[in-house]
Image (cartoon, rainbow over all chains, first blue to last red; front, side, top):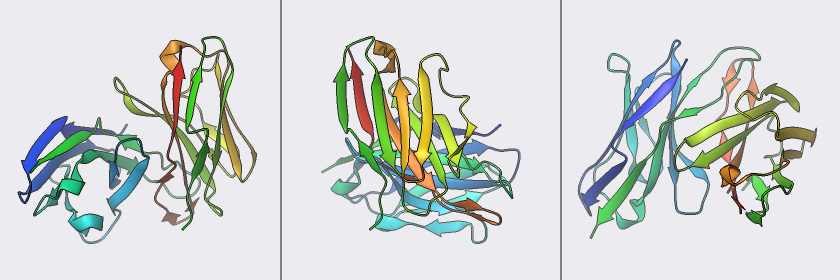
Length: 117
Length: 116
């Protein structure tokens, strides 16, 4: 069974500071990994995803994440926080099988990011 | 810009009433998911469909919840009778899955349900 742990339900950073949101996963097969962002009263928007290939993945709005198999981690970073980054961020894992198999997502509990002016 | 649409966006109802939520997946997507988001449980998968056929609904309370896809452009989630504990935001997502290829899941804006 797959699972996701996001360390820290709330993270506060100053505007211009580094953003680091932590995500660890467990999966019985090579996983697909995702970060989604949710702004208040909105749906989830994909930030970035890792499927295969390069382990450093770049996404929208200046975010990136690195897949580290040995650490079973997929932490999200952004060099310089902006006020508009304040939102809730969800890490998700999918165990992907060929053919007609499932690719359902298992989500972490989310990390709410606050950006202090 | 193709998007998943959901109706209604907000629903307030009284306990015992029937609630129907609708989702229009992105054209061409063959997989539709229903998720529920609450403060306590976070995001939970309720059910999903592939090519309109239900593949897994193990996350759904069977006695009161039902999910269907009458056609490729419409997915419905019904609660009958509704209870206060069903209050949550319900998200629909769609994606494309075929041999050797797996697409991202694209989420709709959600239906915020309040059961009084």
